Amino acid sequence: MADVTVLSATGNTMVAEAYRQADPDVCVAYPITPQTTIVEGFAKYVANGQVHTRFVTVESEHSSMSACVGAAQAGARTFTATSSQGLCYMWEVLHIASGMRLPIVMANANRAISAPINIHCDHSDIMGARDSGWIIFFAETAQEAYDNTLIAVRVAEDKRVLLPVMPTLDGFITTHAMERCELLDDETVKNFVGERDAVNSLLDFDNPIGAGMFAAQQPYFEIKKAERDAIDASAPVIKEIGDEWASICGRPFDFVDTFECDDADYIIVVLGSCAGNARHVARELRDQGIKVGVARIRVFRPFPQQELVDALKGAKAIGVLDRSDSFGGEYAPVAAEICTCLYRAGVNIPIKDYIYGLGGADVTLDQMRQVYTDLQALADGKIDGDLTYLGVQ
Image (cartoon, rainbow, N blue to C red; front, side, top):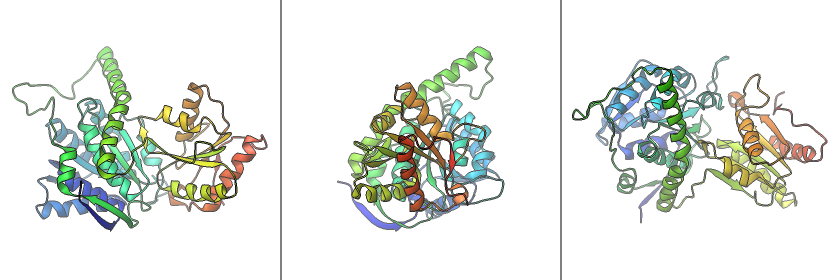
């Protein structure tokens, strides 16, 4: 049985603790709000000799991910962290990391992107990277940020996967808010994450390889198909490793966390920290005899199509909460994904998409009540499913 330390901690502190326990060979750091305290906290562990990590400070986020690519290709367990404009600045190298099948772990503190300048939470940054070939997790709480980070290490380095992973947490809401958390003992975590057994390492001189080579038309096409196959095939591996961690820590792991969805007429779909607001209002409405539910997506890439179909197929109307927009598109990213997976399953349920909380705008219980009220009207044909900005004054 694992030993557990109960503490009050922020999401960033818990990610830094997960990094410490996983003891990477290399950690590359460039600060950006609200991610900075992850690498600051980890730097203290390096300075105190609590890890065996080469801590590399660089002059930009582009250089940060470039250094990660080199370290990971050399066979090192490699971590970093970023947010917002930093993730945007890495965009070119994100695709290099996934295309070269490098198991880098990078926490992202979800934050708005300019302009105008804003340091607060939304999902515009991470949605810009959703098609970069990285596996992506969303944490609701500081505890889940810790769990997701440790699961990410195993998933990334599993030889059935070999893809980079981004465990994400909402800026300031999850990164900086203090919560009750449980930290497992170092030995248990060490045994769970194991050691990286690198394949195709640049330092394997007995088996020399080329890395980052030029590929002409057909080879490039074949490599991209292999990348698609790899992320699709990662789903059962993620579930296997997530369930293994759940058996150790006692906290369940599901691609989609559902609340009262089995008999719900009206369901909200959400990512990240806002799920608590939706569940709170759902409990109120359940007490009034209104059958409502909440489906929270924890694993966003690969997208959990079947899990969402199973959770949503009995509803009369679905409200999707998007904390980013896809300007010029009919719907924002999450709603577009939901429409696709339901259509493919032959499920025809009216959907309404809500853009909410951009730039850290307040997300209130009254807004959640409005969504559930709208969904009843949508099911009755009294309103349409057009995209709505929720809470705009």
